Amino acid sequence: MSKPIPPYDPRIAAETDFGYTTPPYHPDYDRFIRLKEVLGRIDVAKSTLYGWIKDGQFPRTIKVGRNTFWSENAINQWMNEQKAKETES
Image: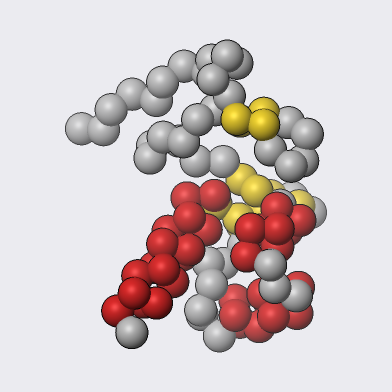
């Protein structure tokens, strides 16, 4: 059984580059993030990112209506996998 997600506490929220605050990281907390934030985290061209998705090398998008998102947890997991591959080499 997973732990309950802690309540949002603005005193300990982390300010992001995009001008809004998010709760501190919790493994059971997930949020949708947009392309701009994904590209800001991994610093690649949009065409490279979509090529990786097409090749199955990057988490797929989540469509909600006409909006496109990624799971923040999926992106974090992918980044951790890339770091692990680097340390294995």
